[in-house]
Length: 296
Image 1 (spheres, rainbow, N blue to C red):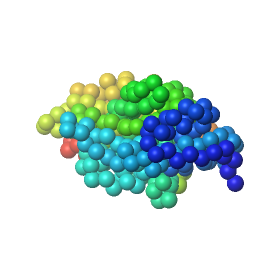
Image 2 (cartoon, rainbow, N blue to C red):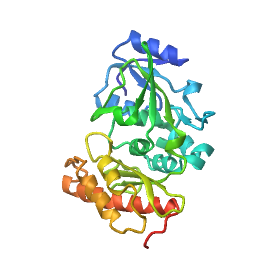
Image 3 (cartoon, rainbow, N blue to C red):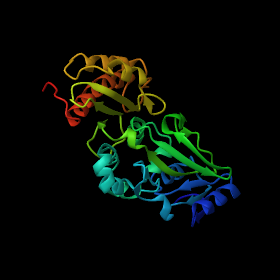
Image 4 (cartoon, rainbow, N blue to C red):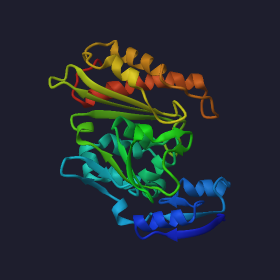
């Protein structure tokens, strides 16, 4: 039994914003795989729910004329993984969200909910950070764009206001074209598991595939929010792929930018070891995917 004050099915973004404004204590719901758990556990019990689940313009993946990719926040993980544009240009994201829960969850859960929930363990968040994703938020005061790296403010907290709705997740052409990447999720089980640690790496190699022109590193569960490691990125940018020392330098630099905690899932010390090891593995696989020659 769920303690829900009311449930409203919005017919449009404007309708949803109106309903949220009229009930300042209400919540947005789409797939509901996070919201309904919080309601059941009592954290959000007794509140009204405003559903955006059946608003067509919030679903699907499209490419703009300039090559930017726009992901509708109400798009389920299964649809993202199997979308032709995602497979061609953002396969890393498709593989990352395919590690969420089980098939039933992935058929229902949405990428917008995964991001807006604010959890550092969200499998899509670290990958979207390495893609420099930009979130469009619409509310009573209009529309604004927020880089995902500025979206999170703390555990379960974001800059999104109660009466705002995420209406688009945009990835610019220059942030995916010519890049390759890999996401590694570490958990105690191979499926139906919340990440103990998530590590996302993307690289852009030179035309001859011998130099790292650019690199991005982001983690989930390595800090109170998903985190980009800018110093680690600087440490190996411009380095030769053949330089075997890049992996250690990359990992060691990452340790200076994270702040994992001890929880029942893992100790702080174990997470620090994972941060080092997964950075090396994800970097090596990203270079391989980008066509670089690496040591076996």
